[in-house]
Image: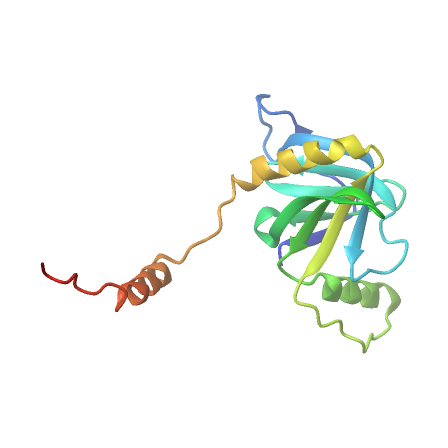
Length: 177
């Protein structure tokens, strides 16, 4: 899984600065942002925080709860701007995996309880809702730019097999004149 719960942030640097080892290149940050997950995770997990769009991952961190998420770009199946009348503007994301099992395991480790209800979702919906709705486009643009740095992995052998199969029988000889 390429989504992790974090308790602190890495060291960020601006593009073009001399890069320290282990530093993360920050492209954009937006404070006073809510992160909404669907289906929901345990109440009070995050609170309001800051979304950090970096070249390697998207981070959300709440200093109120000292908790956040680090999301690698390949885990973001899609992202888009949503301008919902009821919920306001947000950056909507679908994560390719369900992160709810991760939260169940983390809460079991903290409580010692065994949770019997496993959530069986194939993906998670995530929304970044900044208090400043004008920041939605800037978050989306930064995520789009950084996502292009992480193209989807294509298994070349499988790609060419599918290409060969799709070519078979699609073209017929043209009638002779």
